[in-house]
Picture (tube, one colour):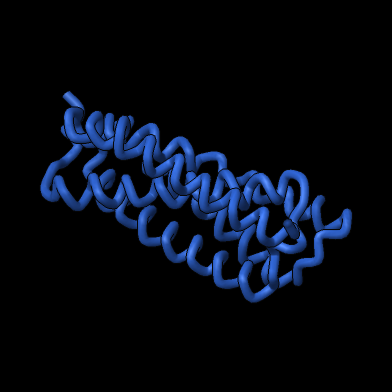
Length: 167
């Protein structure tokens, strides 16, 4: 099996595992708890997106990726980290901005992950990735997709639910 096929298989399996775990465990719990409790763990997954900075070391050791593509991936993920942390803070302090900020997080994340996927396909990154980069593409990226879909689902299905103000 070549590297591209192995990476695609690993990514598909990660999606299957994460989606199954989400359906069996996350969705039932998310239905039973308030908004902040439902989406907070999912936002923490995105707080670590700064791991994309490793692409600089990968590039230095032979990972062939154009600088423009690299920068789009890195800055998109840094924005994702910042939005996740801002949303977590808004939820923690029960800000009225929490829900709108969560929606901004969802839209920005979907656009960023979609852009990175298109760039990855265009640059044939599956056939070039190794080590940590391979693990990020095949494990962490599917987790990011599943978690952002869960956040969007919870926000959409419980429209109008606000985070209670501070007492």
